[in-house]
Image 1 (spheres, rainbow, N blue to C red):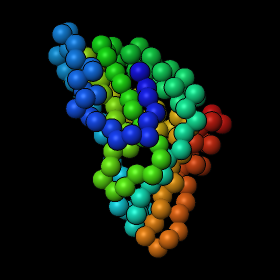
Image 2: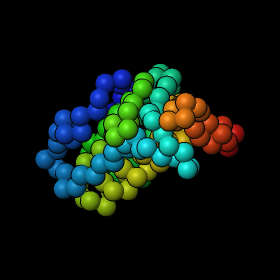
Image 3: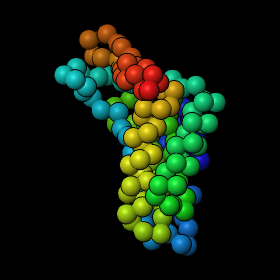
Image 4: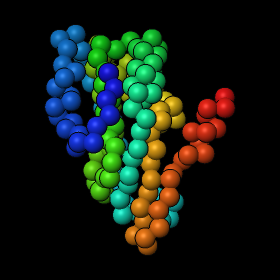
Length: 144
């Protein structure tokens, strides 16, 4: 399951939703807002998303991950709106029978979501400037 929210992400609550008696391994990834990118000092980020396509394509990514690295449960939550330094922008969690599948599925999910989902990131810099980040990479991915 994938979700888009403007609310703060609660990693502990999300982890609890993946509890499964058959799980021997759990892996998660947290993406945080950092204060620097490519030599520029970042003040905050702003995320926008086209939610219907995020859900459709995100669930497709989760299904692909399950085919490649059989897991029991997986979930992803991505924030939208203005986020301050240190806030969590994205969370991915995977529970599986063994740790190897959990690690691999978690990595596959976050890597694919970053290039396939219509979620756009705008950096706001301390000098007052701002700009959308990685839009070219998403456009390049769509041409393949």
